Image 1 (tube, one colour):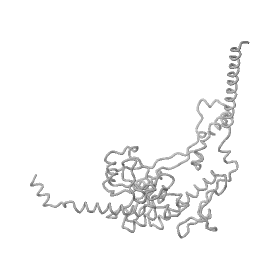
Image 2: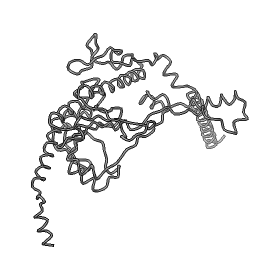
Image 3: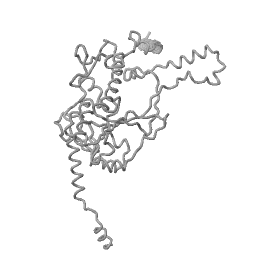
Image 4: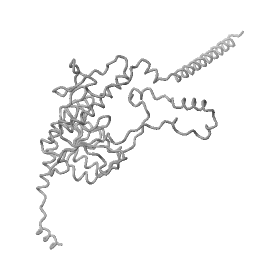
Length: 375
C-alpha cells in the first residue's frame, strides 16, 4: 500500500476513534446529568439533619444579655456559637435565624420598656383586615416644637431599633441597636421616631398548585395517574445555592404590600439634615429628580466604611452627597463608630438653620405697607 494512502487511512481511523470517544463521553455526561436530576438535594441535605425545632425564648437557648449588653451562655459565660453542630451548616443557619427572630422581639421590648417609646400601627386609617406595619415614637414625637430625630435601619432582616443583627448577637446591644442614638437624642431634646421600613408587607404562604382545581384536559385522566403527575410537578427542586443563602424559606411565600405614602415636598421642607451610614442608595437608579439630588447634596452626609480616620473626606463614586470615613472598614460598625460625629452634624445643621432664620427680615404691617406703596 502506498505510504500516502496508509497515512490517510491511519488519520481516518484516529478521527473515527476520537468521534466514538467523544460520543461515549457525551453519553456518560448525559447519564450523569440524568442521575443527578433524580437526586432530591433537599432530602440529601436533610438525611442526617436533626429536627428543625428550636427554642422560642432566650432562656430556651440558655442565653442572656449581661450587664454590658453582651449575649452570653447563662452557664458557661461563653459567646454564642454558630457552628453548634459540625458539618451541618444548613441546620446551624436555621438555628441562627430562629435566634434572630427572638432578638427582634427582645429589641422591641427594650424600645417600649427601657426607651419608653410607644408602638403605633400604620396605616393610621387601616381597616381590620388590611395588612399593617408599625413604628415606635416618643411621647413628644408629634408635639415637640423644636426638633425630631427619625431613625431608619438598613435593608435586610433587621427591624425597628436594630442596626445589625450580627453585632447584637456577637458584640453587644450598644453597637448593634439604635438604643444609644435614641437615648442621646432624648437627652438633647429631640422627639424620636423609629421607622420600620423592612416591615412593609405581610408574608403569607402561597397556595400550592395541588390545591387548585384540575384543568379540564386533565379531568379525563385516571386519578392515580393524575396524582403522580401532580406530585412530580410539585417536587420541583429549588436552586442549591438559594437553599444555603436563605434556607429558612422552605415554603413558597407571597407578600401582600402595606400601603405607603410619598410626600416629597413636605419632607424636604421640614428635614434639616440626614445622616447615612454606609448607605448603598443610588439616586440615579431610583430616578430621583434634580430637586431631590440638589437637596441631598445640601442636607446629607454619608459616613462610609473606610481605612481613613473618622470624618476624613472620601472621594465620592457618585456626586450625590458628601461622604466621610466612619473610622472603620466594617460595614455593620459604621453607625456605632460615627455616633458622636453624627450628633455634631445634626447640631451644626440646626444652628445653621437658626442663624439663617434669625438673619431673615421680619415681616411687619409697616413693611407690607411700604411694599404696597412702592408697588
